[in-house]
Image 1 (tube, rainbow, N blue to C red):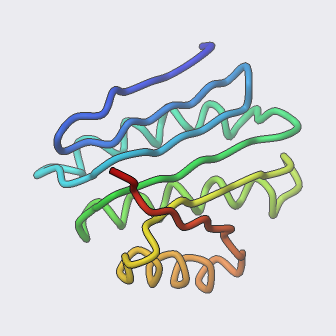
Image 2 (tube, rainbow, N blue to C red):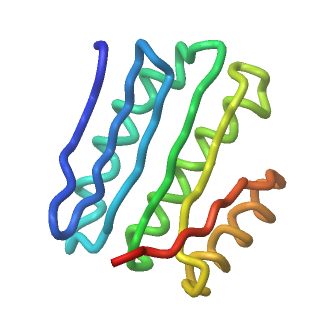
Image 3 (cartoon, rainbow, N blue to C red):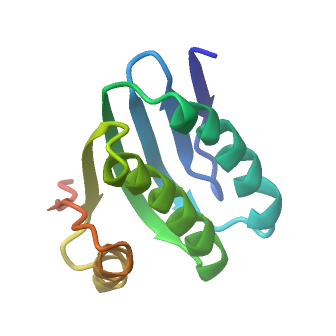
Length: 129
């Protein structure tokens, strides 16, 4: 498989796993009514990359909003990604983009970083109209 991509919808994020370029993106909103049906399939496909990662993996996360049920799966996804670097299977270049006033996402990033003992780099941005 060269690339796996799900387009963003009103309730699902855009998910890209480029096996040939070592790029992973998670962008948008995750407010599905049934994340337990959606995310395990994504995690299974991601596992194929995690089994044979490239020397360098670039991860971009830019989630506008997600609910608690989605967060549990997003956490698992990030835990697998961070594990690649912890076990020296890839050099990880991760960036989590978020709005500077979104305290909820900032707190979640801090919680994930603390739980995984891995400082997730962040970049805040403001939308310009």
